[in-house]
Amino acid sequence: MPDANRLVRSPDLASMAEYAYAAIVSSGSRLIFTAGACPLDRDGVTVGRGDVRAQATQAIANLDVSLSDAGASFSDIVRTTIYVASSDQRDLAAVWEVVRDALAPHDPPSTLLGVASLGYPDQLVEVDAVAALNG
Image 1: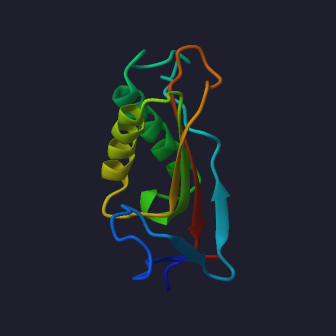
Image 2: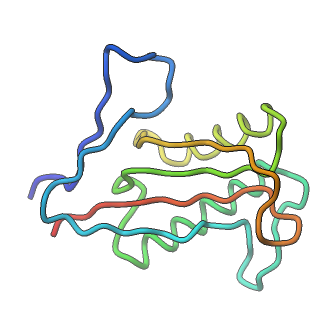
């Protein structure tokens, strides 16, 4: 069975990007849209207060569980959006490194945003994803 998606890289765009610039989802694929994965433990407590790397690690672990429950894995992701409640470029880069390394070698199109705040107390990171599976 062929893959449900194909990542597209362009020789005409900056090669420094650590992700594909587009993803093609095959006709007949099932799409999985995740809620934003937050840095919460099973009890709903925010993990890693004040530590964007720790929060990114927990968010990625929670995303893995959500995808697994839906029958998918990181390699099925066709897009991520990563939110960091910080205007400090170093915080955004630190979160990106955690996400990039967790998904590697898969590098789906991604958007990384600095935002004013997120929904839970002390929350600094949220990661959502779209995945595609064969029909």
